[in-house]
Length: 538
Image 1: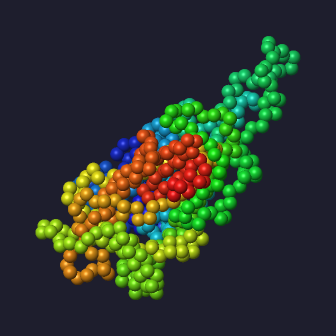
Image 2: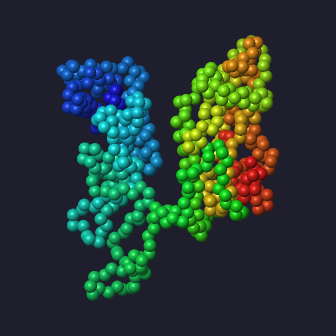
């Protein structure tokens, strides 16, 4: 790896004896590209890397060899992190596609190929490939590791009735030959080809070609009539998922140009038709009568939600650099009046909830710190709509066993499987969906531990007293756990039943009407049989 440009080249060895020739090969490559050898090369203390042969070669070309101290991987942190990152990427790719472990070298090579073409903070806007070669890389050809690729059958004397291509597993690109590498499951070998077609979404079924129904030579008679002729097969329309989606979207289109305003604003899919909730406590088979239109409607709902969140975060990222970092910077800047109003609103909320009371600090105790966090909230178009100030406790200074218990920091959130399942049900059954959040959620939880905090900056009365916390504050280690306990108690009091398979899913039935709540910290998705029930829940 080049430490300045972060461009890396992976070499695989049959045994350790081949290490020095690989080092010489890499040095020659650098000399041929830049007209000079590197000034320094850093290794660990492995004898296969640093020995008499490598030292003589380095001395001949004026290269200084640097070695790390024994068992001091941190002295070569860039290379060590490089190795770990590549192995973790390789492991994830192999597990995701359920591929055999002996393909680890192909996975590592592909991970390195992608990493050289991905931005890194060390280069400030450049990719290692661009820094090394001097031009931006082309990434239009990239494909998912392990996806299906159809490779041309180049076997000689192939019958005209046999398929022209076979399905293989894509395992990487080969820059030198401008081709791809693929894994042949039949021979358990990795091969290369330039005649291929990717098919990541849906692959056609592999065809058995030993017998072709309805096809006979001249004068040949069939012993029994075929159950289906080729003409009948051709007459049946074959619709891929992509084609079906395009056909359905001609009749129903989601307007992505005007998404809901903001992530926090309540959003609703207006489908007032009532439908009884299925009994999800028992496993049921999917009905074959569901139409493809209903399936794609669920996809549209999910895409609309993703689009809304994406625009929200992009708007926040564009404005994040303008947010003040201290209360002095906020109050003395050009927008001081707006930030002062936001700070006063936050303090009013804290006082109204009775978040703390001033008290003398007991001997032997040390208060935790607190900090003001300022955020400008924007809508989906990037227009500023609100100034938000929040007082956050510096929970990193809490002591385990004193300020919080080791088993009191976990807070569950809903599973994505639950979200996808209910969104699909809501789309197909035409249920009503609404999203909202709980304002100042963590402030509703009562602390069981005795915690002292410094008075907020800008509101210190100079008495030397500290804040004795009564309610949980954002930033405390146990804040999420306490809020979840309070929410669970409140849900049960108003008649909601907690789902056993997902502790953040609550269901309430009243005759044929029902409400389903999906909880993600302080964000709530409400799914009901009609809009009136959702209004009651909110």
